[in-house]
Length: 219
Ligand code: T5A
Image (cartoon, rainbow, N blue to C red; front, side):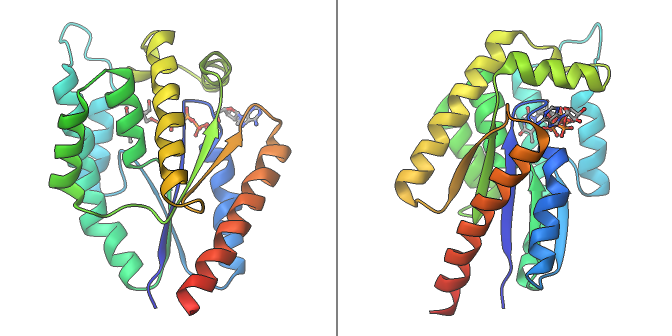
């Protein structure tokens, strides 16, 4: 039996890492093996790319093309070497970020043209896409203040507020399109709530998706 790919998305400080444990726990309780991944990262090479994209290169400008290509290089390594093999073995993969992050940050935030985004996606992932996306929606000001409370901001987190407003707008637009194509493919969670309420909303949405997914894969 094939597994599934569940992705948690959202801006900085939305609470993705905070809810990932609850998502994994839910899936394990349903009797499945779970593998958690993060992007960029998740293989030795992709983790090296993560360090590279997050660090501040001070005097050297990181071009938006470099940033974009590094994100897709890391994703290609992870999907090919880890995610697809795990799903084929029946595991449920829970991803902290995936392709939607690139659409939001590089497509929306950095304003990389749509054609470039879709060409790169097709080249590296083909038709591969998550079974379910949980988008934790938060105003950038609140998310960034949470991220700041956690420690120093990295290179991407230091982009201006307008960058994150554009990223959020793109997230919301993409999620809307996904839901129009398949109502069960994605859910929006109000991430400005307290931790317990966010967790509860996440689990309710996950439960609705799981019932539908399980039902569809049995019939
Ligand atoms: N990126 C990534 C791209 O530009 N393009 C891409 O294609 C990809 C894949 C990744 C960076 O790379 C960029 C996006 C990022 O800038 P990262 O370290 O993985 O770097 O960054 P984030 O995923 O954004 O990690 P964060 O830790 O900032 O966000 P999380 O995981 O959403 O937030 P979390 O859970 O760590 O929480 C942050 C703080 O808030 C508190 C937590 O305790 C923690 O202190 N918190 C709450 N406080 C109050 N109420 C709640 N509901 C809370 N939930 C969490």
